[in-house]
Image 1 (tube, rainbow, N blue to C red):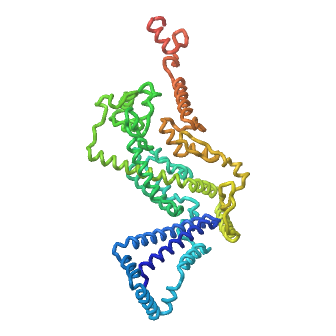
Image 2 (cartoon, rainbow, N blue to C red):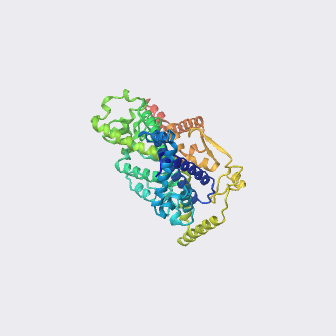
Image 3 (cartoon, rainbow, N blue to C red):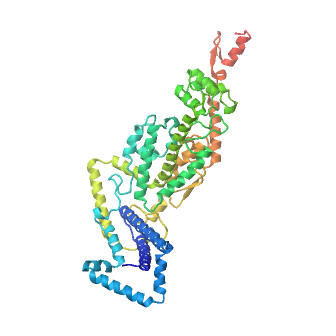
Length: 507
């Protein structure tokens, strides 16, 4: 029996109530992680309902079928009183014919529907209050559960076999995997990893537009892929070694004999990355690679290059690589957002590995008791936090002395990471082993070794790298000066002096 104007009034009222409920839910104190996640999902549910009501309201206002305009004309015409009486009689007649249950349902205020929904979600009943499902390992959004993905990773061919804790720290360091190892199995692993991280992000951060983050990562990826600056997938520009996925710096090698010490596989990887012929013996590969030192690709002998593949196969090969790199870009973005969950997961796994089975059960029981006591003791109101201190595990601001002790009032800037700021010395020291700093060092062409610990300025890193290269060059074995010979009289001479005396016939 509702008219179009009554529908509009109802939708306006519904939107106002939804905004009011979202505001109250934002201001409500959440003591535990479970309450925070449930609250975020509730706000998301109310927001989706608000968007739906707004969309229906816009459709009514657009009035494409002309019914709203016709109804307004009837109410504002010369017979408005007779129209009003006619509608009033139809409403009375409708309620006389209906049963009591229908009348009761119609008379229920709109606020009751949402109030009951919020009470249901805020209840302490675990079976009813949860809006989202988590595994036991995830601890209702506190930790990541990458056990299954870890098994898939260590079963990949050519990757380093690491333990679970190391995998948690480096699962997003995909640029360290050689490009020739990124095959179909690796693509399936990436798809499974992205699927889990995307799903986990939607469950633990429902108010974050995950699709928008993924789209933004894709846009940035397209730009960096075109420029050839995407980590792990460099593009050839002018130098002979710039497009190598397995980078090999020839500046410290003075002869092909030194290159031969690297072995067949390493030489083959460097030659394949340059598009050169990679067959032949160890000596032939080393000589062929040494010929590229200090030269551009266009300056090399064309006979050194391998035969080009068919265009269709080459295009398919490049498309497959681009698909893999695109997934890596999306995983980089999502893994960066989930940094706090990853750090908490590492600490949780390390703690659990140090406990016996009995101690683990006692710890789980203690956590349940602590959560129940917090829910009983929690009081309404906003947390008093005038100094904007970080929140602890209990949802309350940490003590100020602890805040100062951990140096959380200090921010450290790293120029190598793109002037990214890190809060506290612990996060600053940890970032030297993370992907952002490693990628910055890789862009500079410098290995991220222990020599460059605590160096944040690009100029300092470049100067230290030049100094290390000079030192390594001076310490390199030089046969003419360091290889020793003994003449017939027992005198010990270096190779150069010995050869000079021998040519002069003085020995």
